[in-house]
Image: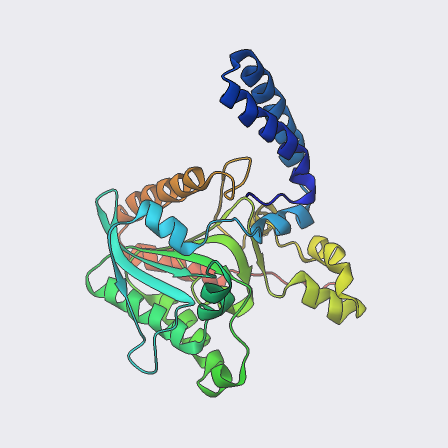
Length: 314
């Protein structure tokens, strides 16, 4: 059974009636319900608030990294382990092909179902996960393969064991190495982009976001708890943080917004996967035409110009 957010609930009854009409093979009723459904979809998704976009980014039916990898990557072969400590299943790495283009895909994976979510630590990587991602990226660099990185995490795991094994150093190492890696890199935020846990696989020639994803230095709940001592003010914090794709594009913090289906990736997984695939292939083609030294120089300038400040009074 699909899960409906509060603002999606008007769609439920229409979809149920539509299915019954299809079973009855009542073509006239089907056409009528389809028309009503399209109107309801336009109304529900036509003017979403920042908080509603946050809810969609966290939707329980939203595709995760493995969903997209299975839909767009052919001849996939999984790469395991960091060769130092263990295989962190919160990050998945694959070699394969996208429409004949050999590449490496790296994704943060939350998992479905209680057992799988626990096994994948709810998509919160340990340091060995980031080292595993870096090992896969260096493998791609060795064979001059473009890299597709799929960002979807509440944040890096903050547990004692992770800190003992160098969580901060692992994230910093990825930022440093990915900023200078010679192969083409494209990163896409597919759900939640949480803090340094997202940045560790977010440094790339192109950084894009799906239209119902978020990218933030802190969760809205965490921000509300710090600023107002009230996690219930998450909606106000979401608006203040400016974490949606359009806001971040306006600030120059991301390169592109990838339009997912209006009903959201959770209701049209293939449509969202096709959008990511087109974005990856189009940008790989463009970046391949650039001289390598020029491409690295552009990447460096972009990173050095990230963020703004003003010393004048507000």
